[in-house]
Length: 198
Image 1 (cartoon, rainbow, N blue to C red):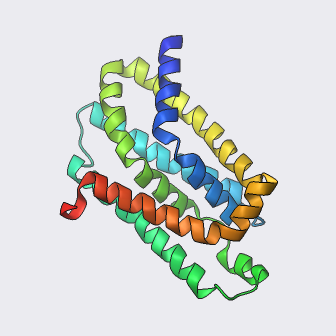
Image 2: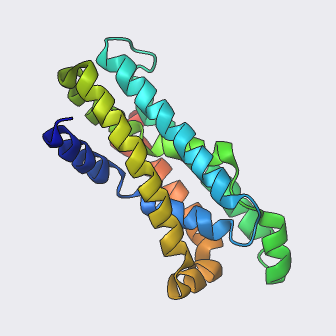
């Protein structure tokens, strides 16, 4: 294995996915105390990222399952999930903390996957030319490194969400932060991509 390619893959992953650590921490905070949270987040993150890789690999080989003009509209996924979370937070704003936690539950696998895919939609545009020039062997190295680092990202998100100071802040403000972050991601994807003529 070429160490240069491994280093490039690690750098590319870190640069294109740095924002995911905050989203993961918010998901872990949302699921604090709920059984299966880590499993759901991990499976959802891997499903969403596998979809990103599949689209990028296919596009590197010339297939266009997802037209470039459709990528900005992926912002509708986190936007919708953020609005849904905001509505739930508003409806239960006066509930005691114990009731809020019981009603919210942990993050769902498909929600995590949808946010991961939508948030990584712009990564596809970065990955495609890199994959196209790396060849099959290089592309395989990139994919393996990305999937290994994804586990590191999940662990980092969980780590940050469980630090006492951060956990306390997320427990107090997470129900507000999660919708704000998801809506922000959705709007950013829509605006930067020029969706709806924005």
